[in-house]
Amino acid sequence: MKEQNHIISTIVEHKPGVLYLIANLFRRRGFNIESISVGATEQSDLARMTITVKGDERTVEQVVKQLNKLIDVIKVAILDPDSIVTRELALIKVRALDTKVRSDIINYAEIFRARVVDVSSESLMVEITGTSDKIDAFIDLIKPFGIKEVARSGITALARGVKSVRIE
Image (cartoon, rainbow, N blue to C red):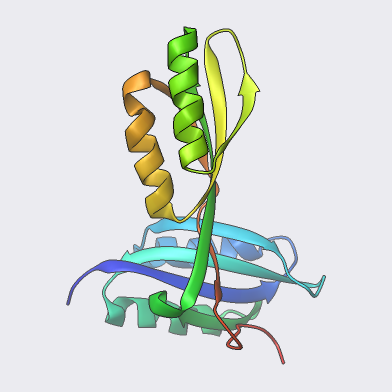
């Protein structure tokens, strides 16, 4: 079976310790979390976790079964990559020592619909949102300028259309 990235959406109790329990489950099973994003949902007592994990389908199905056994986990679903919207946020600090370099970085940022959010005498900080592929492409493009730091939020995702992972 082929290993690939799978996106798991979970609705969990919004309380201390839940993230630890879920991360510990992955650790015990020997799975690496490729990315994770967590935030409150439309219901203040619930949170949505979007977890990206690499593995074959059988392995990911086992993870889902284990997640469903946790008391604080309300709902779990493997999202179909063909019918979801994914986004990620990245902040990228790039070395920019002269006006030509600054101008080039700003032009690339505009092409990628990114924004310059901070300027210093030696660097620019760019904020970019989009798919992971878009962010990877932007990073590859500006790498020759000298990337000083990168912070990425991890993937967040929702199913398209009327399908949803929520409590009815």
